[in-house]
Image 1 (tube, rainbow, N blue to C red):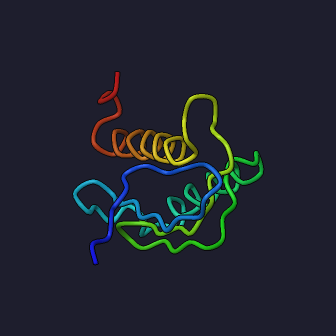
Image 2 (tube, one colour):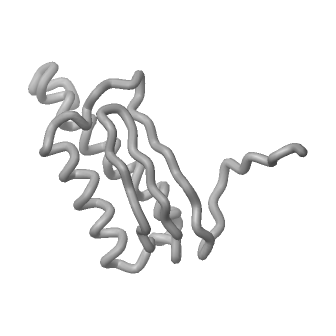
Length: 103
């Protein structure tokens, strides 16, 4: 039996989702960064973009069981989550490397 792997999500279906940090950097070791993930999930849930059933935050990746309920404008909730958290982590990292790195 061959299992088909899809690289897209349909609205109103439940999925197991994994997102990893680029180069497996342990960015999620800090409470502050874990809170960024949790607050973003809360925001997407409060705005009725997702229904979150469970999640696990590991040092280098996250797991979700969720249902994407509707798009956030043109973006999927998955896209919104990845874009927001990616930008926030990039801002934090750029300040650590050099304050003028992103200017």
